[in-house]
Amino acid sequence: MQSTTAHGQWTTFDWWPPVGWWPEAAGDLLVPGPSASATFVLPPTASSVHSARSFTAGALAGWGLGELADNMELVVSELATNALRHGLCLDDPGRQHNVHLSLVRRGPLVTSAFTDPGASVPVLRYPGPLDTGGLGLHIVESLSLRWGWSALAPHGKIVWAVLS
Image (cartoon, rainbow, N blue to C red; front, side):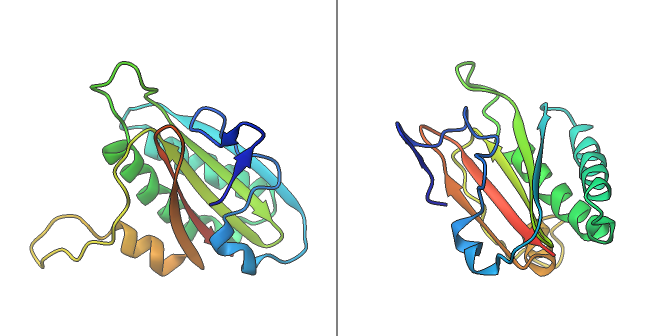
């Protein structure tokens, strides 16, 4: 994502997302159609993943895109879990301790975008057959038209996935 303001780059503190935002790496997917966005703040609790799924289902239903709900809820679950597990800096009192979920509709496409204050980057892992986790980003990749991430200044990142 290449996003700038008059003062420089977007930060984790002013991301909500900016009007008209779309991940640059998915710009070629855009087609004309209605646009809308909705944002939800996930506190650092286990129930936040369920709340994010419910929020997503409600937003999609409101936009008349209920057919995307099942796949988008899976993607949101995986990205929310990763953001809460790997993106929070709970041992650093100087940083925010929330994750933001933004859903951005552009025509028939919807992007789920998570921002978190962490520095760790999402990486596709290839877990062994007895590992109990590590397949979340494979699920995101298989259900998305495209997904990716970008760093935010002064710290943090945005991880996004586009579905249709």
